[in-house]
Length: 420
Image 1 (cartoon, rainbow, N blue to C red):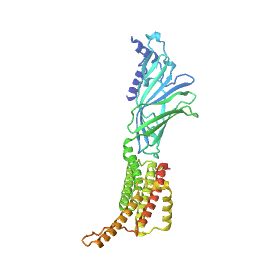
Image 2 (cartoon, rainbow, N blue to C red):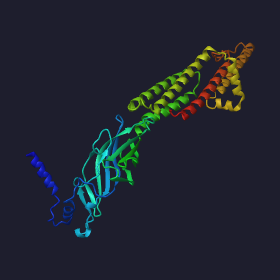
Image 3 (cartoon, rainbow, N blue to C red):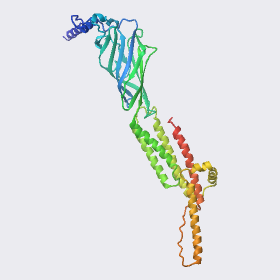
Image 4 (tube, one colour):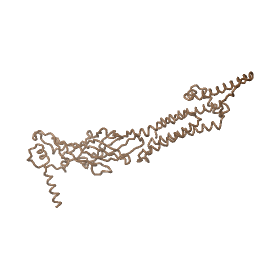
């Protein structure tokens, strides 16, 4: 019984367009051209040129699986001379719509691990048929394409995804037109990703194969604010520490806070970064954050050594004294060392102040010898941890020289290092 039902259904569909009694010219036209049409046979042209265009109406990139999910419109155009008609015999009708299930359509397949048979999830549509026999069909499809993910430039990364379409016809029977082969990109498709290009090429060895290459690039304002901007702020903060007073405890505290913030940034990068592909290619920003952390650690060690050396060795060595004298005798170097924190001027002012207090103390002693009625208050002389202020001046100038040189080296390194 089931076999009989299938046979009757097939017979009914086969003769659905063989009713020539209709008075409607369009219905009559469909009946005439589709009545004896065999959709299982390709058009009888020696070579069948096919125009193929790929329209992307929307897409989404799955970072965990490195897959591009595309909402597409696949456009076919070809000529089927079996379907041409004389317009004058059908009230001047130039074109009609015919269901894609009732005509021969090029059978394209997507060579992908997810969809071995077919173009993905596509829906049948009505095709536009012109009187010359030219057919055009636009199939809405949802496809999943595997991508070669490269996260080296994350969060400014771009990826290349390749879709290989082929037909089971041998290359002598079908020929894709390279001048009419390409992709069209719709606007406002994705808030985080941008589809920058679609390139279609024909395989020279097998003309039944068409390659479409998709290039996507990330444009994420959220990642820029949460990852990139804090990185720039930490670079500026690290360089500013080199302009702080070198032998002060609060500079060491700032260095500790700086290192803590670097670790926090690396932790944020690790949680934001997609884990797929890390073992193959470590992202540039992670390498750069490690590079920043190393410099911050060097600044911390330098600040601790400055403070320990000034306490343990109040008297600077001879070689340090000679270096300081060399920089002091050069006007350009002298101006560069004291351009912002004029430590030398502060030391000289402090030394002059102590000298004035001592002079005032001697003058008051002379006055007291002449008159016992005058009560002189004992002056308060500034005390330091050094034998004299000259040693302090030498140490601080030497520290400034090291800070300025490190500032130059670190600034150049931050600019030139690119993560390779």
